[in-house]
Image 1 (spheres, protein in one colour):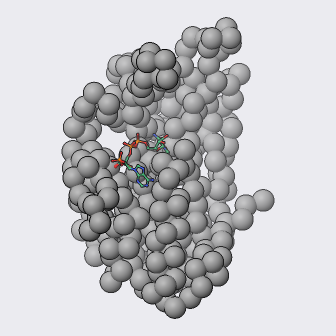
Image 2 (cartoon, helix red, strand yellow):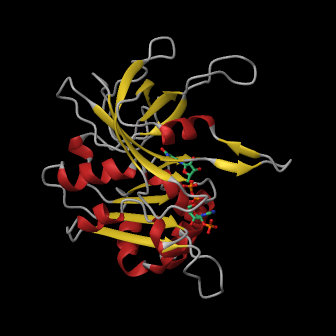
Length: 291
Ligand code: NAP
């Protein structure tokens, strides 16, 4: 049972399991979709996958070849699908937004994320085994309940599911005319994923608001994060926050959840309401996918 405060569409899940994955073929692995730095190599990967039925917000599992330290095959790693779903054709493709994970562990050794490095190194024509799709709840409402305001809040590659959701709302939902806010956070201007695409939407109801944590600061000298921008845009956001139909989707770093709560407390204050009571009114209307 879902506790979403709206009707969810029917979706297929787990069509392809670990024991019978579908084999996709890489069409393109686009490097440098943002300014690459040593610690920020993000790819946009397009994979042709036959008969893979998904909707915006669902994830795909990727099976990296090889074995883990226990000699067992690697478990599938989940990635939010960054492309718009399409139910009507048998040919399918899906797109992923993948950041190559490389970090130093406590012992000072360099650790490379198994699946992200496997995906980042794939070339056009390579095959990749996919499971899923996964996720029944982190979806847009059914079309008849979809025309309502949205606040999307993302950091880094957490933007992946919002790219197709926003495309669906702005270009594929007839008569859609509600406000859509996208608060996106990265470190530098060069890390604003899919910026050109978001800026290409000219609809007046679309509000694209970025924060550049290493280039912008709050008045008290902190790194500027997405929730600060939510509070900075009171003039346009207050009516949307007040609207009981508004849905808030959060995706990316876990720490954002506290920030969004801080922004809701701020708006409760503006509306003269008790913050806890105010936040309760968002039950079933805040959807999170955070790590
Ligand atoms: P990142 O580059 O580490 O961070 C992006 C931005 O978030 C930076 O500007 C960072 O600021 C800021 N930030 C740090 N803490 C924050 C907080 N508490 N509140 C608000 N902003 C904060 O991001 P990333 O490496 O791309 O990681 C994004 C997350 O999304 C990962 O956890 C990933 O697993 C997850 N995700 C990925 C997918 C996918 O399909 N690829 C889907 C869903 C979620 P500073 O560094 O300057 O402090």
